[in-house]
Length: 149
Image 1 (cartoon, rainbow, N blue to C red):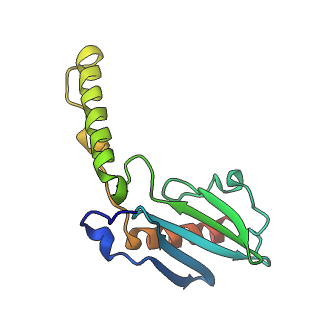
Image 2 (cartoon, rainbow, N blue to C red):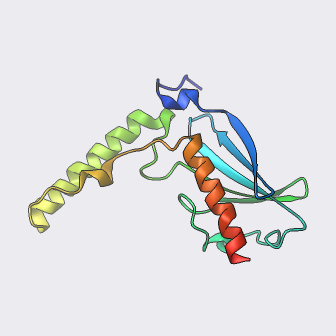
Image 3 (cartoon, one colour):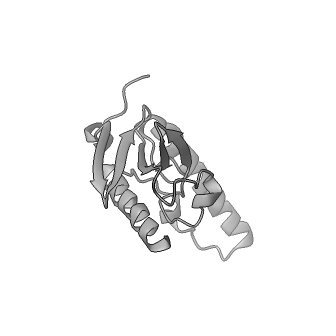
């Protein structure tokens, strides 16, 4: 794996754990530089039997819940920051090219079928989701567990 390009992602923790409302929450950065968030749910918890992604569809978290597994007697539920407009450092050059192509295609479609106005450029921007963002989303996920119990 080659070194990640320069950027804020180089100052992010590779792994960080914290406790929120009694739940263990973990933030991890993968080899590509993207951040992930996980909540550990013990066997005694009402959510322990929710072992399918579909069980978590009603939970609002960045990109939706994308990971459900069991480990060491606990249920691990998580999400990632590798979605369409999420900047993934190791893929930055390819992502920038893809976004530029998508924007050009949108401009052409707008000219051909639309009003001729430029497409909203903010829809075609990448943003890096750092550990602070992931922590906020983990807290939001856990807060929802209390509301939906």
